[in-house]
Length: 340
Ligand SMILES: Cc1cc2nc3c(=O)[nH]c(=O)nc-3n(C[C@H](O)[C@H](O)[C@H](O)COP(=O)(O)OP(=O)(O)OC[C@H]3O[C@@H](n4cnc5c(N)ncnc54)[C@H](O)[C@@H]3O)c2cc1C
Image 1 (cartoon, rainbow, N blue to C red):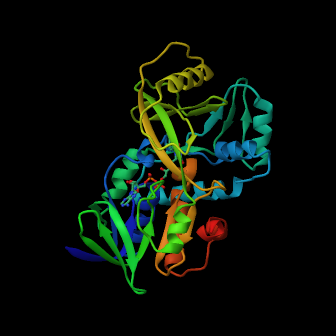
Image 2: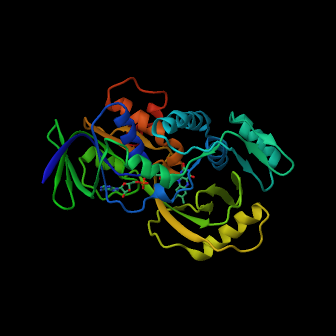
Image 3: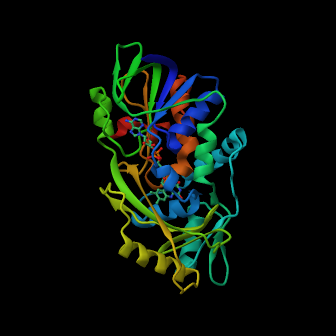
C-alpha cells in the first residue's frame, strides 16, 4: 500500500521530532516514520548545557575551538520551542565540583558564560535541563502529526517527488524528506547523500539511573555528571567511539558511578539501572543540518553529545532551508556539504 505526505521525516529522535514539530508549527503536512525502539534521545540525560559543553570541547581541543556562540544560540531557542509545544524546561543552572575551580570559572567567563565561584563549586545559570522521555512523547503526539511505525529501507527520487520504501514493502511519497536517522546507516540512498551519511560515526554512551534524588541541579566534574531526572538521578556518561552494542559494561559503569558520586560527597554504593544509547557524530563534532545535495533531501544528523541542546536550532536551520528562506547565522557551519 502507498500513501503520500508533504514532508517525510525519517527518524523520531530529538532531531527528527524537533524538525517535525517546527514544520508543523509553520503549517506543513508532516509524516514521521520510525521503528519505535529506544533511541539515543530517550537514553540521554537531557541537559541543555551550552556552558559546560562549550568548556568540555574547548578543553579537549587545546583551546582551539570556541563553540560558545553556537551553543548559546541553541539554548536561547529552547525558551520559544518549549513554550510553543508545552515542554518541560528547568532553568536551575549547573555547577562544577572537583578541583581546578579558579580555572574553570575563568575559562567559562572567557567563553562568555556567567560563572560564580563559591567555596567548593563553580555555578553557572547558563545550563538548563529538559526531560527527554516526556518531550519525545509530547512531540510524537502533537495534534496534526502523523507517526508511522516502520523502517525505511530505500529512498529514491524521480527528480520531483521522493519515495520511501519501508521494510514491509509499503511506499510513502513526499515532496521533501528530512533524514534524521541518528547513528544508523542502513538505508539505501542516492549516492551524494549516501556519501555524506558515511561521515557519521557512532559513539556509544552508557548512563546510570538511581531512584534516589541526589542533586537539585546538574553537578559536573572531571569524572562525569550527576543530574536530576524525573525518576531520580542520572549519572553519566561514557563515550565509546565506534561501538554500537547496547550491553551495559558493568565494571566500567560501576567505576564511573563511584567517581561521580564521590564528586558530590557520596561514598556508599547505590543500586542503579543502566541505559545505553548510540549517538551519531561527525569528525568536527557538529551536526549536519541542511541539504544533502539532491533537491528536497535534507539532513538532520549527528549532534554527538549535544542533541538535546541543539535540537531546536537544527530544526530551525533545516526548515528555513527547506522553505527557501535566508540561511541563519549557523547554516554554513552546520552545512552537511562541509564533510563531502
Ligand atoms: C548516555 C547519553 C547521554 C546523553 N546526554 C545528553 C544530554 O544530557 N544533553 C544532550 O544535549 N545530549 C545528550 N546526549 C546526546 C543525545 O542523546 C544525542 O545527540 C541525540 O539523542 C541524537 O538524536 P538523533 O535524533 O540524531 O538520533 P536518535 O535519538 O538515535 O534517533 C534516530 C531515530 O532514527 C530511527 N531510524 C534509524 N534508521 C531508520 C530508518 N531506516 N527508518 C526509520 N527510522 C530510522 C532510529 O530508530 C531512531 O529512533 C546523550 C547521549 C547518550 C547516549
